[in-house]
Length: 460
Image (tube, rainbow, N blue to C red):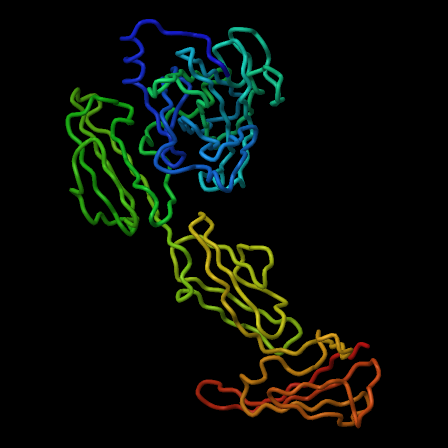
């Protein structure tokens, strides 16, 4: 949106900026409500790129510029709101200068910053059109009277449709100033909610430290600000404390004083603040926030257990000794949340573990499943030309005997040997063939002799 409204009183401009609350990073989004207009500013992209410019080139209608230094974000401010009850919400973003160009995106319900940043979560409302009014938002433009509709590039309509919300849902608002004011100073704006404003949960502002943060080890510091509390600058003293294990026991009750506290990687923990007001009304306000710094999966902490092998449906389970949330993929397949894998092919396989917060993934981890191929094709193409039990070398004193359907012994195999489908110099026909494997394996410290019988198919 191209703003057309200019403030000519320098003192008023300074007052708007000095009283504005803003954060340029999604992870520290400011909880807001609809009972009063919100003065905001946009000044830079913050400590981290919420959208990696080398990976994410578009989020909804917002696009990365064509030059190498461009980003989806330019000068941003992030807010978050929670629905108290079902309703319909709109909002107006009004420009407080004529040198800004305001765009926005709304994400939700119930997504998180990691999903927004990696492109999994896309905006449910979005607009970056320009026109000759000082407003953009959801609903109806109060200056032109134009109704909002789903974003259409080139429409010159800076409004999107109203948003239906349901009790308990959480939404993020990204407000972005793609233009600059040509002198490097921050640009002010006003965010005003419309329609069913009482459907927004104003107690959400009591969580002024923001929603819990999931960051990666090595990420920039997380700065906590006591001035974002509902009492604002009415502060006599501030006390910070921390529970590093988030187990209900405060590890340091006097961590720091001051209106800001900086949490550095990798100091995971639940951080608390107690603010004593100067006015005494209320006497104190408190809040807490859980900050997790996640490390990439360490192969040394990953355990692969083969639960079933030498059966028709081989099964494995993955255990990661870590505190993050992970997803798993074998043999280059799709990632899954489930730690159990069924129908794992016999022989050598690979596993990759991925941190779901975008903090990295493991290298391919090889693992072996002992089992037998259900078919082979001895046609000389180098693929499935020979047959044996895969992983037989891991068993004790293993021998395999292959028979035709009439019980005639055709071949005896051991480790490092395969059957090529021949008997006495002649190719055996397509058919099912039977095998018996005699082997031993340890059980509770004792070597136990075992036998396995089953069949496989020769295909020509």
